[in-house]
Image (cartoon, rainbow, N blue to C red; front, side, top):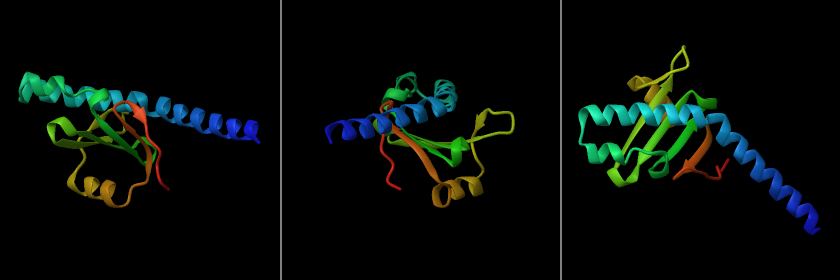
Length: 118
């Protein structure tokens, strides 16, 4: 019985790691874009807080939308995957869709995967 429990736990842990790897480039790209925006438009100290380790991230619709939250800054923003694979800010309609109808497929807090309640 203990072995079966361990195998189930290991399977869940490995699938969570796989999801992290699947969306890692997209998350890093979105955070980089946000950091560059902050460096050009806000204070340097705020830009330094824009890191994956200081964020809460939600990925929707198999990576099409990414919600970035930065609790220390009391700030959040969304990104949408464009046809060329890069991420940019969504339109207001896309933002509303993401928040109300899109399917959450991955979440992390401070760079660590979080369990999604389905």
